[in-house]
Amino acid sequence: MVRLMPSKCRSAWRAVPAPARRVTALAAAALAVSAAAPGVAPVPWKKSFESISARTNFLESVTAPGRRDGWAVGLHYHGQAPIRRPYVLHWNGTVWRPVALPTAGPLVTVNVVASSPANVWVFGNLNGVSDAAEAVRWDGARWHVIRIPAAGSSDDPVVLGPSDAWILGGETVCPAAGPCDTVLHWDGSRWHPYVLPTLVGGELAGGISGSGPDNVWAVGSDPASGGIARIVAFRWNGKAWRSVRMPHPRIPIGGTPVIDVAGRRNVWIVAILAHTAPGHSYIHALHWDGRSWHMISPPVSARASFPIIADGGHGLWFGVRAHWTGHRWVSPVQGTPFNADFTEFAQIPGTSTIWAVGLVPRANIAESLIQYNGTLPK
Image 1 (cartoon, one colour):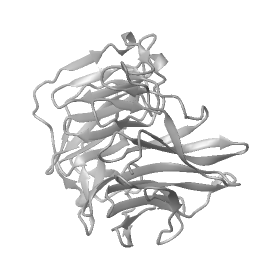
Image 2 (cartoon, helix red, strand yellow):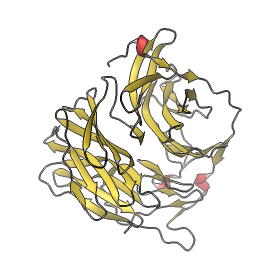
Image 3 (tube, rainbow, N blue to C red):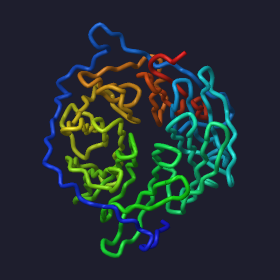
């Protein structure tokens, strides 16, 4: 791992002097998994795109900056090796079409994030090497290559504006604290490293998510004992990173919590727990509603999985087959291939419609698949 020098650390860390917050456990196991809310039929998933190719290809990431504007990126394979060129699709409101990118070298695309149709960022790894990340930004008229420091990661970026983006920055050494995790912030011209608190043996692999310039969260794990770690989170308030006072569910060491920040009063952290009650899924969620934390404990029958995304209301999608509405579980299984594997969701602005991207196995290869749940804007 490439380390930043201590002199480059921008320390903006303070602990939150927040009052204790209560945790409410929802007895989700007692709730029946419903095929529909009362009087409402579940909305089936529908196919929007499937690649036809003699080689394996699949989509890793999707974003929807506009009602009729979407982007998806992924990888092409030759045998077992990824082909080192961008794989980018653009939705123009009617059809998905391939898009070419200018890059500094062979780029394997892994993420796409946008804050508007005129601010779309594609992240990837040059030559397929994880510590050689690069970004390419679309300003609505042309592409711009943005260099990323050696410590920067292409995983789980947050883009809030042309001069406001965050990426994971890896580990550095700070004189007073020893090992420190960092995140990098783009101000429109350069990347600035910010130091997060020491996680001895821990990591921020869970990623980052944000809803505004003063509401960016990072989530990770901090080892406890006996092969168990605890979930930890940090929040950027526009001036400094602060720890979040929260419950710390135990997860297996190496387990990766994921986060979706839909607003100040709508934050979801989901992980596979180390221990769970009989009849419950190992996948659990913590939900912050602006006042308190609530634990969502899916019943096994809900078939909860990943990826996750807030539904625009009070609920969360746990994969394509389990939707927690905030009151009950709904299972809209129609239209989804049984063997399909999805990697990311995106919500179309101003709607409750969700894009899902991933792959579906066909014979000896896998093919890209894009589905949606809801109604596509006209």
